[in-house]
Length: 476
Image (cartoon, rainbow, N blue to C red; front, side, top):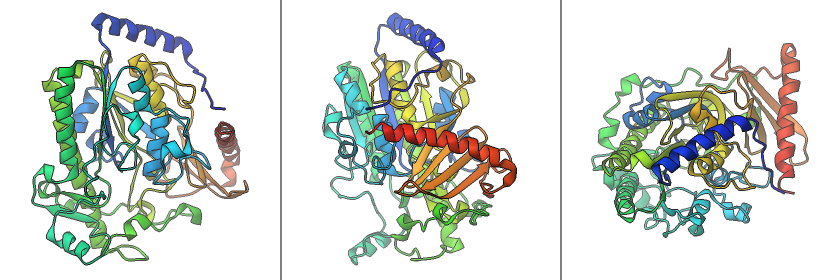
């Protein structure tokens, strides 16, 4: 039986929904949805306080809407995170686990977010990577999902002779980065932006409410971007993270071998990458963020030019975080904040602009929130809470904890702590870690064994296990 989460703030909720319904009736319009997913985008953005990254278009979106400073994915791996967000269902031991999770296999009875909107009169379109698989989930969409990677049967998207020559030699992947002197549309993300712009133009003419999804591929590996975006950054200003080392007392379960990166040409099979490669990887990540930011800007500019912005909910999210050397790690697949903390920004008609919320939110909250904003029924499968009250008042009292897992590590994040417990298939705990974000925001000192905080450990462990039991019972 699925869980239907109770709403703690029901009076506030009724007031806000009533107000929003009156607003919608006054306009006599159903809001459109522009749904922007960005692959492997951690909060490496100026609007999240990053001192180097140039992201003017996403920053502008944040200034015109609400930015969630403490949003967390529920599972730090592409396919599983997307399956969870797009069904509103939490991951579990046997549900939404792997990078190549196919939502309809793990939970065939679930109705996806775009499918729910399609069944309620919306014209739904998928461009790029929305669900994980290249062929997407066709029944979610009014049109056949479109992805420029289909013809290539790959997301690699190399353009330089150097990398193409590596592939011609029978090697499965080229270098983990690339700077090519090409136009934006030469790479997939430029093509996704162009297709989304074309769709906006015809949707404007059709006049039907739409749910238009644009799933951008960068900054996922390989870090390929046009040269002009690499040139935005001077390598002299790029440095390794201060915590380019394993955290003190971190259990072995917390550290992985970043196998996703190991598969690229020139990356050593074991041990750390060279410092030169590490700097180049960080440089490439920044370049890809700026490249994607430019594509988001193109789409938002067209939304404005067509006069659709005033009646379109825009939501932008990165499917999980990413390590850029922190804790000696690269890629995601970890229970550290660097893998779990994710960008989430929303702009909705009728709500205040330039708002910031410090409230704990999680990706299972997205589905019910969009239902409330569009006036659609919330399905019983949904396990998150609508953050609609936060749009009205970003400082309202909110969740005391959010949850994530990967794959045996179960994590709880509170206002002050992140606690992770690793539990084997027989239910036996074999490792744990706890970080106090008030004094150790970078998570460098695991204090799970500190006797001075034993009561804190007992409390967060109890809260974590309550959630685990609730989630596991929901699939029985």
